[in-house]
Image 1 (cartoon, rainbow, N blue to C red):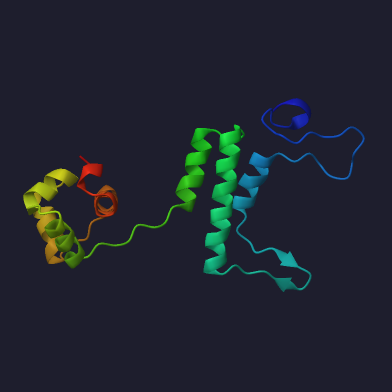
Image 2: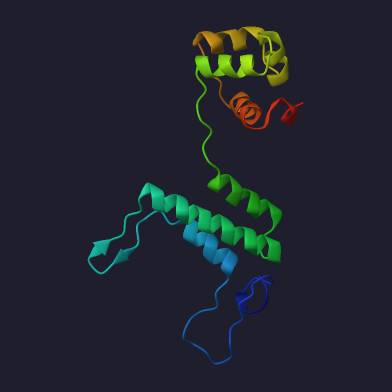
Length: 153
């Protein structure tokens, strides 16, 4: 906290004698806005957000956070939190999709297992449909599909 209870990074300053509104600290205001889970109420109506609007809002929040990061008001760690919040979810990979990916890359099951740092039996079970990839393996499969094998080697 800096002067007058504000962050030293805050770009808004309290004018002397102005009691119209408290000083605004953008990083804190953005954090508190993101933590709100209840809809905003106007008079008798409650605003509900649709899935389309939520993605536009998250896009706007991420863009604003990126601008604040470039200006030095948000540090790298906080920006990473906004990046994670605004990331698209990773799609599930079924047996056919994994087999098609492996064949498009001209890899054997053993080589794919080595690239993903898993066992050969795990890749076999994925392709049979007994198991589904999760965690780091799912992320790596998505990365390989989007950017190619060179992205992980």
